[in-house]
Length: 193
Ligand SMILES: [Zn+2]
Image 1 (cartoon, rainbow, N blue to C red):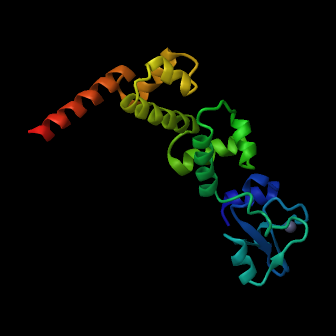
Image 2 (image 1 turned 90 degrees about the vertical axis):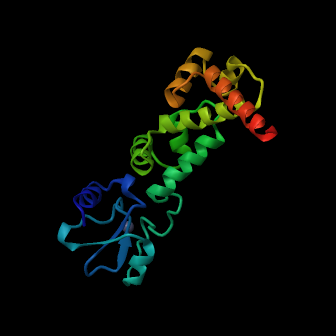
Image 3 (image 1 turned 180 degrees about the vertical axis):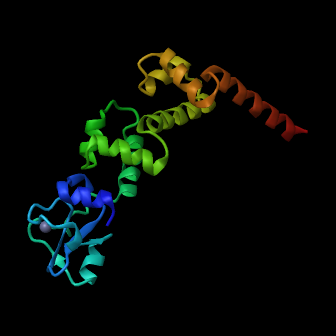
């Protein structure tokens, strides 16, 4: 058992639910970290990394905290993955951290923390990245103006869009479009030759 796991059990921390399960030596049931029916001493605790592992060890799920009925709260990787999907699906809408955390059945500060740990990026970075990726597509394949693209992607002003774009891609949207058009032309010339 790690220090963190012990702290979570002692505090009955719901944020730890889904990350590990535990039983007590000599006991018959296993629980989520937040279960209210147990107040164990550290030396009694056996840690499991999945429900199946606890069942294989001969424990049955506690009737109070129902550790086997919590697939809604997935693993850290799964939560990060679902956060990515959520941001992609809602790319063009305005939403708050709270809205997204609620939709993923987790809490905001926990989501911020594990997303960063799991992906190496902040939520804000990822949210910008998917919209800038979309902007690149539009700059390459449509005639929409920079202001139109900014507005379609939900940036409050074209200036903000250009600033974020330059931060993420190192050039302005206009320079990006020009560079792409030039490289397309030189591809065509190469093809004709
Ligand atoms: Zn329990």
